[in-house]
Image (tube, rainbow, N blue to C red; front, top):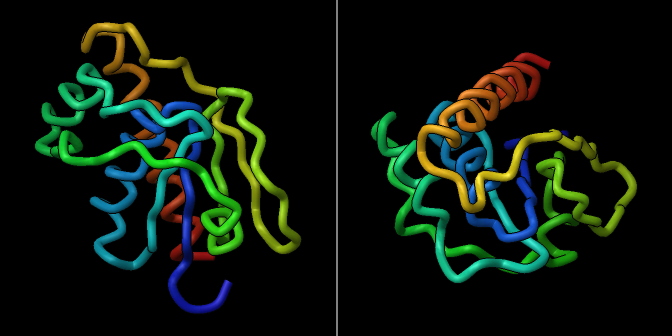
Length: 134
């Protein structure tokens, strides 16, 4: 990687896990990392329970719009992280691919989404440390 690292978070609907991960990385990176998220079958809106869990930490993802995964998204990223949902991404040489196996928050209440958010937070902090220190 040269310059600003670029990270892409991918889940099927781009409504929960990937949106939470993107918001957390943006929050912690303070502009030092370019962050994107996308999905293979984007939902119409962000998962309300995911938005509520993030709001508890004063992070607002309600204005985010789930977007369709494209080859350009992958090609422009240094690190591509799938969220344990079996998504397939176009593979480009020189990219780092990670699969974070995480429960899907779809259909869950905020109480059940909190542990997912907390695990994403732990992983995002670790990723950021690698990107900025490595």
